[in-house]
Image 1 (tube, rainbow, N blue to C red):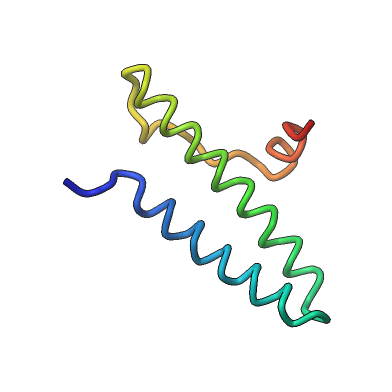
Image 2 (tube, rainbow, N blue to C red):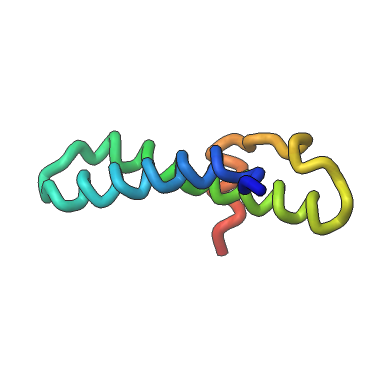
Length: 76
């Protein structure tokens, strides 16, 4: 059986790879690094939503990608 979250996880892995590459460049593009970090936060949030919906018998496909500002405000 395939992982129903494989698409989200694949996107997360690609973003992590890009983040590592940008950080490894030292003087990489800081604007792009911020974009990647925000997108990673949004993807992790989506994955958590999907898993929670599945756990409580709801349809994980009803999870929605939230805005970066919404997700960033979750940080404590």
